Length: 280
Image 1 (cartoon, rainbow, N blue to C red):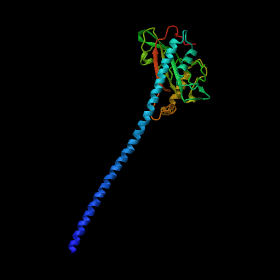
Image 2: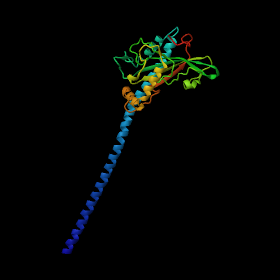
Image 3: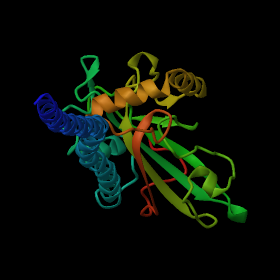
């Protein structure tokens, strides 16, 4: 009898032991599966969130690029069709203000009460370029809208040096046209107008000749302004631009040293609108 009981107990213990081992193995496999899911979730969520923010930023990016492109074409159309006499500085200022009006409603494109309503503003440049012998070209004069103009009657600034807010180089001596702008080409004695527009963001304490009514920005002031701009952290400026322009994740790189989304348009001006002398 004792042997029979012992055999029965052995069989029963093996059965229960086998079941417990199977249950234990199933639990281990389930834990491994849940653990792998958590790991995939931990790695996947940041990627999905990044994609979400990029999808939100992409329309804003192309919207701003469209705005500066549209502004350049609108300004060129107003210059060519809206004026039947020699252009003056006030014409340039009002034409570009009108062209930017769809993006900067009311007075938001002007520096009022020591601030910009949108956190950034527009910047427009106009260059008069003439072709010279041997395929060379030279810039005769340049005009830019004052980034800190406080009212629409500001006439902008005539300049004679390269600007930190423009991708076009001011070269007053005979130079390779591509040195002035990479897509520029013109024949001898042929005139071109180059329009460069973009959005401007900079520390207001480092701005010189902004909206002060000065006729010509001196070379010293331009050098000082450029130096003060370049001493700022590029990453810091880009971060400020992202915040002001409403971007969450999309990295922004300035087109020039101190401007974003610059768009350049080159065209042949209508006769009588411009001369080699800067507008008055």
